[in-house]
Image (cartoon, rainbow, N blue to C red):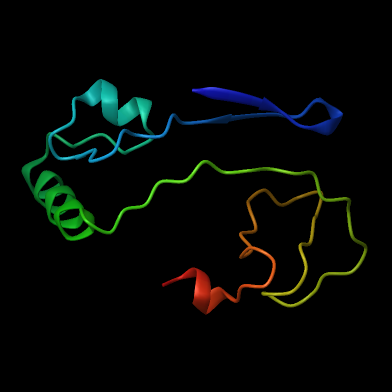
Length: 108
């Protein structure tokens, strides 16, 4: 795992990027954990659901290393797709497309 220190001393830990062609269905438990994938359940029902999901996603997965920045607190909230908003009682992420690209361009 990689540790990133943001301004103000905030630490973020991110998973290693899996190698090209990584197959979660054939991976060891240690590799699933290393790359941030959920463990495969020993329950046959959940194991089958996991296999079905990753079989459908297999050729569609694209792994990217996230970037982080501290956004100063705002006093007024905006709409759901407006500028980033912070709150003292909220934790999460806002994902925005690169400058000049719309959300629909990014999803292709």
